[in-house]
Length: 559
View 1 (cartoon, rainbow, N blue to C red):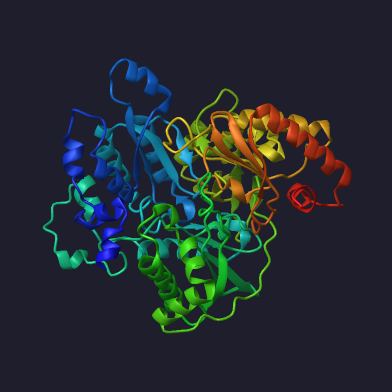
View 2: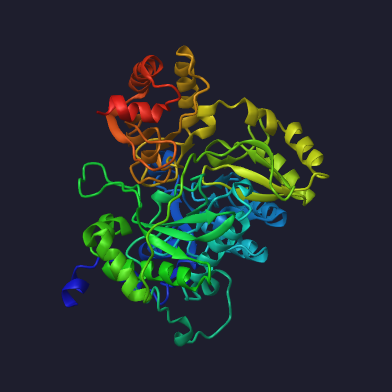
């Protein structure tokens, strides 16, 4: 044990002495001399759902004036299954306008985050969210993060039940510490250490972040194989039988470090929910404890569950889970995945309610010259006649609208150009996704969400030159190899390597069951468009009938 302690990464030591993730956060927040918080607290504040960032566009200017960096905070909500009531959305709109950049950002994990919140506004922001029943607990950090689930109510009459599982799992896996309420909400209470004892996270939490996703076949809209733990709903005769367990997904890697790699989750068995949910929750819990006890705490680059599964082997990992649960997992059951895209426009579900899926480019809810999206969403919320469901593809579904109320909602969407904007976007643009990247992400090597719309316009032009403008191609971009935009799980993936340069990956599939592969390295825009022009020409000429571009690239260009 002494050797293990000696080899712990610095973050591990910070967690252990943090007094339940409190650290010196209270003191940091009171320090008016700097816009930053203390170094150790920057690790702890993640567990409270926020990151300290700075505006990288202004670093040079501020350095020349001998000013400290322009520090601010990103706050991410915990929204299991991506659901908000109209009242909660109105509050989020108002909080964004008062305390942040004003842009409401839909993440690739089905939640919302606000950027540009200065230190003095962090507590007021958290308090305002708390007043409408929202929090950011464990939205970041070495714990289970936001639990995602199939967002579209049309997928199954069981959609609401699957959503409830996401919500319950999120609550079940929350840390026991009351530090969030102590630091941000000024909860006046003398804490009993016994009350805060955490049998799951203990005082060391997990070795790295942990992500759980639930999916309802045939739509893999939550990219279940990209999750540390993927739960695949097995439905027979419109009845939920239970879930297949898939472990060890994760898409991040490090350029030039062959020890790091993206990995799809491996299915290790099935857990029934026919008699009760007890086995499901027990198995979920013990998957986390295996990662807690066997994960790498010396090298954070090798600390995700995917490396634990590969180090142990999937069979040994499953056996360890079974030993801890006290029951054997059943053999994984069959299912079929067909697609993972959002279906835009109006649709009616089995219960007669109507839903409109809005295209939100790169998840940015803001008003632009051609579409007043932010204004429209507020007006919809103010009617109180639609709920908000966010998707893992960074869009929003205005849901649960009655037949009587549909016309009123549609009128708002037409008035602010939301419906024309959604209808006019090309298939490639609608399926595209990008991470935040510059200027706020400290890990970004290249642009992503600011540049992606411009690049898509040019790719649309190349496709049109070959008569392929109606092709449904999934394109994703990340400003670095950390995987937030799931670029390595797309048909065409761009991974930033340096300002204006990207690796070009090809060959992912429609269903999200195959990683793409590196095709060309370190390309600038002109080289990207030239390579795609050549690839699209070959695709047009040599594709099999009905073949998607990702399958064609995998079959011909990568072999």
